[in-house]
Image (cartoon, rainbow, N blue to C red):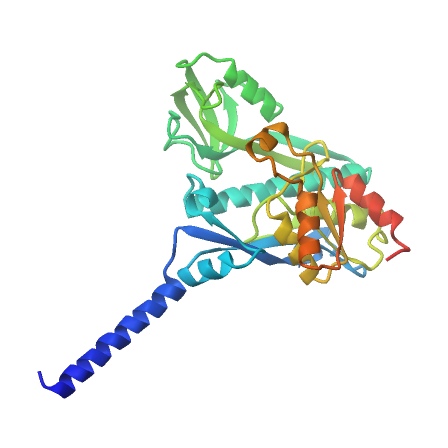
Length: 352
């Protein structure tokens, strides 16, 4: 090979190596996920109450975190940014596949919408009932005899022919059965009714069960029609803002008083506002949306969590610390129930 050919060959090798290096830096997926402030969505764009969008001035906004799989470059940038966090693939997905993880997020969103609708209608003193349909399957343990039979998103409707009024009753019944005893589960899979036989096992928490994690599958019954269009959006943390929006349209259209309000928090069956993840990032999302107020849960840190992490903070403390660190102007307001947010908006109507 003459010198010119060697030179051209070397140039090609160098160029290909450089291109591969750039590709690896920009696109090679790593077994990590990056969480960063994402954005906010106006509830009125995804929800109607009795066929009507909320047309009053201002808006209620639910905030979210942007999640993406890391590449070498984004991993490096995230490690240098106090407002981003890096989690392992195991922490992000658990034992779920990407498809199962998406389905779990959808289940949480549906549950959140049902709870928000029920609580808002109760607060607005409307006639409403909540039908208990069973429990959604969120995961099946490797030791469960129903592994490979029950799938994420299936609805367990009865155990040994017995139906239940709530999840607690179902769990209590299964826990009363002896380890190794036969158990028949009736369930719905994509609308098809099925049954499967298995056995009761000893769970990792020392109790007896069938080895599934679950959440309630419910359905709201009311003359008021609340409809959501949240395709592609998952998770339970928009519950508080859904509840506020429904309540405002039905009971007090002027409650918002033209303000841009953001917030986060799940809605529990007793009307309390449950904790969420990423409060420090979500308050940044709220500020970037133009909101002047950010509602955030302020539930005490449990002794169990404190024992594992003495520095653990409430969602409110996380958000407030982030707001101060990033010099945000938004007002961070702690809540433990929906009524706290309603009271704050009513009290501050003429102040903001």
